[in-house]
Amino acid sequence: MISFLRRHFLNKKTPRKGRGGRFAAASILIVSFIAGYMTLSANNKTCSAALIPGVPVAPVPGTICGCGVLPSVPCNIVGSTAVAAGSIESAYYAALVVSAGVVENVIGAAVDTLVQAVFSRLEQAEKDLVDWFETFWYYNQRPSMQDAVEQINTVQMEQAKELAAAQDAQLQARSALERDVRAHEAARSADATVNKQTCQTASSAGGFGRANVFSRSMRRAWQNEFVAESSNRLGAPAANGVAAAVREQAESFEQNFCDPRDNGGNNNCGATDPAFYNADTEVTARLFNALTIPVNEDPRHALALEQMQRNLVGAVRHENLSEEVAKTAAGKEVVMERRSYLARKNAARSVPSLVASWRMPGGQNGNFTTALREGAGIGLEDISDNPSYREIMHAITIDRFNSGQ
Image (cartoon, rainbow, N blue to C red):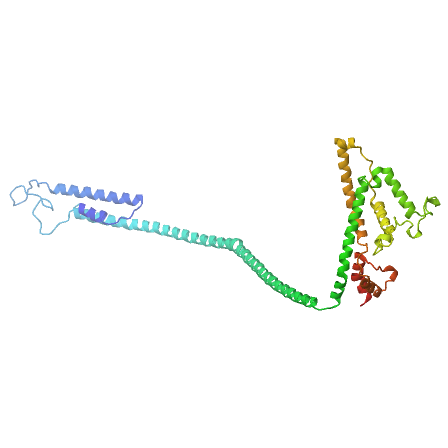
């Protein structure tokens, strides 16, 4: 019995059944075991005495078939071990068939559920993959690649532009160098050749230098006279005060530039020359329109220029300070303020002084300047024999081209 149970229950993989199948198999097993046990217990007992005709009365041991003579063929007693084993095997087989069906149904349902879940998950995974790829490609990867391509194209275009600009700059520098070399060679050849330009330059070079020297000298002289008058320097008319300086200027005007017709004919004029009437105020005619002012021919021209500068910019006149006042702090402050004002006045006077100094004679190359100006149709009355820096420049830069030669 134990061997049967071990063979059918322990050595075989019994599928798990439901609670009803396990209870039925267990019940059949218990009933069969009890029936076999009871049968074995009854057969082991000694048969009691029985009356059998023709046989002496004596106790006989019981056999497997009961009390009596041992039969010649095996007997099967109800409830024996073989019957119990067959019953158990039949019941176990029936229970096993039922359990196998249950297990098969459970496994089939589980497999169907598993397959459905797997296919559903695979389908969802495919949808998720498609969604992810669309988002990644259309919104992340593709725009980034497009931007990168655009940036690469821009960088390449800028690089090509820089390379082209560098090459152009190199070619331009080379061309400029070649032009400079040719210009230098041409200029050197021109310098070595006697031509119209070199003759004009050689003819006017000496006159330019002399005229420039006279111009600087006149500017310096006018400035020194202005500083002496404004500082009440000893020897100057203003050394005796403002009244003495005004009296000296008025006398110069009455003797040189006074027009008796002005002031309603009440001007107190001396023996003035009509050619110099109001010469100290005719700035346009006697300063800007004149190329050379002949101060070497008549000193009244220089005096007229000096008075014009006073009338244009103004004169600076101060009363004298006593020695005691000049030593005080207040007196020193007054002196320094006067000098500051004098410097600013000098800066303003430098403009008309420069214009007038350019028109001072001193070139001493009248023949050359006269030839150029005559060729341009200028009358001899407007041409100076001792031209100024301004007249020489005018002859070279303007009259020369107007002459057509």
